[in-house]
Length: 117
Length: 113
Image (tube, rainbow over all chains, first blue to last red; front, side):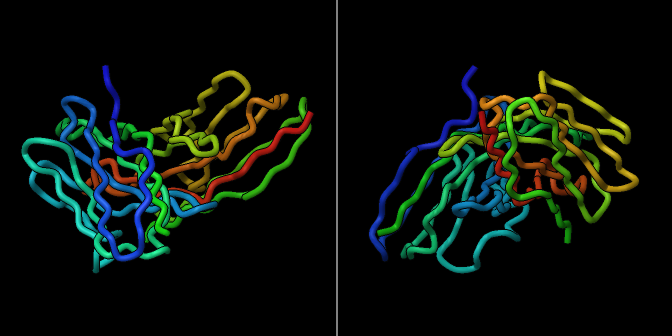
């Protein structure tokens, strides 16, 4: 019964490179959420996706960041031309599809810790 | 915009003592969560509170929810060193946001021998 799987766990990128973070949801879950946690801070919502659809990207920076959740395969959070301020822990959560059940809990992955040098 | 505020942000306490962490939120919500995070780790779910007056207890931790006051508390009884961690409350927003959560800033708890 695998939980949410994120990889890599640690990622080091030089300024200007691209970072790709992967998230495989709990089997059977088709909602994925990405959160960012800056050092010493709480988690901030970035984007909410369902399969092949972005539902809410209100927390995502307008430039350099993109997310997708294809029909097959993991969800990807992509950061282009990374800067030092992108250094953070990025957490993915998934929740099941159940109509009219709004009290479902989101299950969090272990996170990817991105360091930009 | 939903805002979630925790206090205190830092808490240093001695083993054996009791204390309460508070979580206030600004708009109506249908669920509230408490999570624990150890340094460098992910979030461990502690409690899910879904209705006014809900109270849940696990070991030395007890959480309650007052939806009218928009307040949740996490009470620590007879603290032990193993409880040292950062505790987050998180609030579920609207039905249209699925399971999206808005987090408080976290309370960094240190329990001293």
